[in-house]
Image (cartoon, rainbow, N blue to C red; front, side):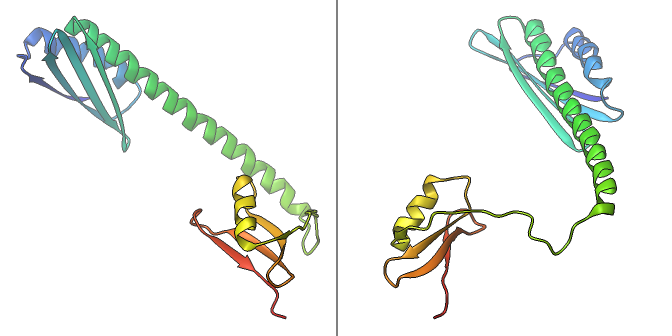
Amino acid sequence: MEIKVLGKEIKVTEAINDYVERKLDRIDKYFEDSSAEVTIRAERNEQIAEVVVTANGETYRAESEEKDLYASIDKVIDILEGQIRKSKTKKEKMMRDGSIKELNQGTTQKNEITNEILKYGYYEIKPLAPEDAMLKLQERPTHIFLPFINVENNKVCVIYKLKDGKNYGIVEPEN
């Protein structure tokens, strides 16, 4: 692991540098090739340690404030190790789940049903003004469309959310 220790308003001694390197060995075991930038500084009565680790195209950052610099370094390493373990566990779980999904898709493709209506949805159609239909659709965040009878022209219409998530469209019959 490539380690860079910077001190702001604190002189980085050999003892501090060795302590940081020894503590970062806990992080190094998770990656083959990584780099860390450690910044230590003093503000008021607090000793602040900030560590930014870059590995495998990802960046992990943590900061800790303590009265003692060594305690601050210990705490920031604990935080980073937790972040890295959580990230690795999440990736491993996604890989496992992904492989199971691919397996299931491989077996269901043999019995694939095509050109069939598989699901029916039933909606109550009420007479509404387009603005009122938009408000009704906003009340239901899980729905993406709402059929209604337009009170202005007595036609069955459908209002739907556009992909931008902010605007709406209306489908209306021609005649």
